[in-house]
Length: 214
Ligand SMILES: Cc1cc2nc3c(=O)[nH]c(=O)nc-3n(C[C@H](O)[C@H](O)[C@H](O)COP(=O)(O)O)c2cc1C
Image (cartoon, rainbow, N blue to C red; front, side, top):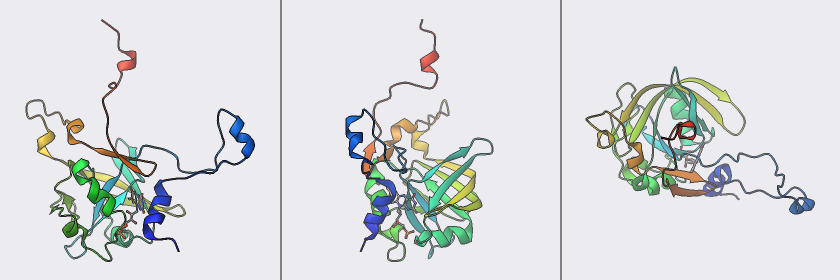
């Protein structure tokens, strides 16, 4: 019988088998269709609109889908404890994760809120959101308050399409003079093919490829 950890891993660590042995001779091989876009974020989603209901789950199927109005999505399997909570309240928070939160990020992705109070177990602090009743994680460098607009049934996962209604940023990363948010100093983590990574060295910035050399 598969355990929960294996199921989670199956979602985000796609092992592949080569379709055909002849493929081995080629410079590229064909794999069966799969979800192979890496690296991914591994964020902590908070949910629940009262203390007894508060929960956290780790999600990698998360992304931005529109700039204006600002919109995001998360995809969740209906069997997750958090699924009904989010479906019922139609609110959630996307909390970005950093190195200090890496252990909790993995743990909240293999344990269920059915069995644990994950905030307490991971010593994370629920703090007030500005516009919704779901708490942010105080330790997160950036928390995105979302209100669900639409739930799309896709198959294994349902996609929660949401409006971003507010963003809370840890002021430690804000340059008070310029107002610039230095997320690069937050030690954010990424998830790739079943492994967690710290972000590496900067290798360029937006538009540098076309910038005229002096
Ligand atoms: C790195 C990582 C990414 C995950 N991504 C997703 C995801 O995108 N969607 C999902 O439904 N579950 C995902 N999971 C699994 C859930 O976080 C996990 O089943 C969790 O225990 C659910 O908690 P809950 O039962 O308290 O809701 C992921 C787990 C890990 C470790």
